[in-house]
Image 1 (cartoon, rainbow, N blue to C red):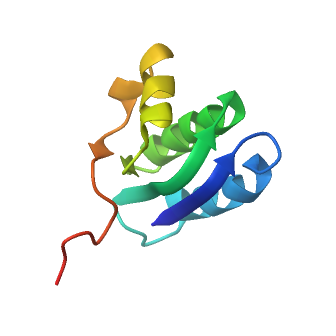
Image 2: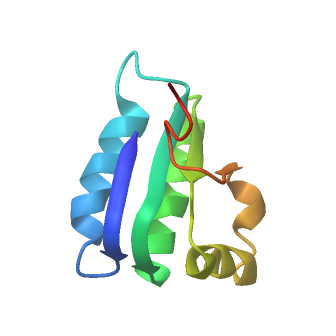
Length: 99
């Protein structure tokens, strides 16, 4: 799981890129890579581009990149760019409701 908080914009994309690429290419890692967006406050085109690239890398590695608990702004960005169907969406953050 990769947790993203605050803003995912041009100023933070390199930091998040390293985490995402490590998660999607880790040998023996999980098939589903969950990106917890429950604490994300804003995402711009640089952040969306990063998620799309990470998704491609995940697919090439035989994995799925899932987005968990995206806020309304993130969902709108995915919707207006036509990217929404590319990602499985979990409405709750990972572990929500687990004992």
